[in-house]
Image 1 (cartoon, helix red, strand yellow):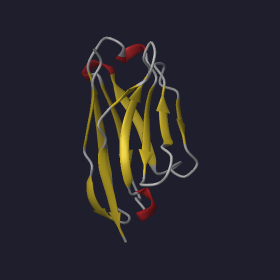
Image 2 (cartoon, one colour):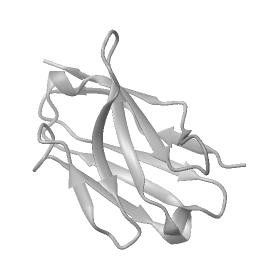
Image 3 (cartoon, one colour):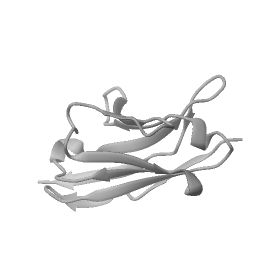
Length: 115
């Protein structure tokens, strides 16, 4: 059974920083691509960042240059460093990992950026 647990969300002023963490259980972690998504009420979930097992990364245009995704395979943890935060970054942020059938999702962590 795979579980993903996010943490690190909170309230921050515009221009500030937060670091989200996603702790993963199970043996899939080191060989899996991991993703961060975000969602605001009434909108579809948006892919924010992806990291592959070899370290290759990809970002949504809206966060390029501000967010950094990284992973620590020894700790089974993926991170999302968010700098220069904007009010439009306000959302619930979810960690995602591939499954044999459906993907695995964490419970989400709220990020609120005040102007």
